[in-house]
Amino acid sequence: MTERTLVLIKPDGVARNLVGDIIGRIERKGLTLRALELKQVSDELARGHYAEHEGKPFFGSLLEFITSGPLVAAVVEGPRAIAAWRQIAGGTDPVEKAVPGTIRGDYALVTQENLVHGSDSPESAEREIALWFPELG
Ligand code: RTP
Ligand code: MG
Image (cartoon, rainbow, N blue to C red):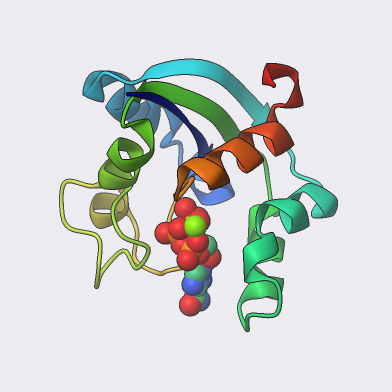
């Protein structure tokens, strides 16, 4: 079943010049780019994107991090795209959960600066794509 998912290459990934590597992994897996944009995120968009984490102890630093510099936002499409992209990304904690061979497992050390984001369900994907790329709706 063809799905769409929202991909973010977070500010740490852009600052570390990992955009080409990360996009390459998406393309080599066989997933297709449907939208791609370099963007400085506003506090409002960051709050909307991470609404599910409001009230958690790391919420403030998460907002600060995601707005700290330009990021890359993309819509990626393919069979089981949501799970496929989360598999390529690796688990949230880049040492305890992400395994070598994944983006986080290969390139990240701390949980906040874990380089990438992917929608975690079809409902999240629909909400996030509408938020980041309203023109695709
Ligand atoms: P994402 O939403 O970015 O794809 O990551 P995820 O599903 O793997 O993780 P999630 O639980 O949704 O958390 C969102 C982002 O918040 C930061 N975080 N920090 N300090 C902490 O304990 C903590 N927990 C989460 C990470 O940047 C995580 O990707
Ligand atoms: Mg998440």
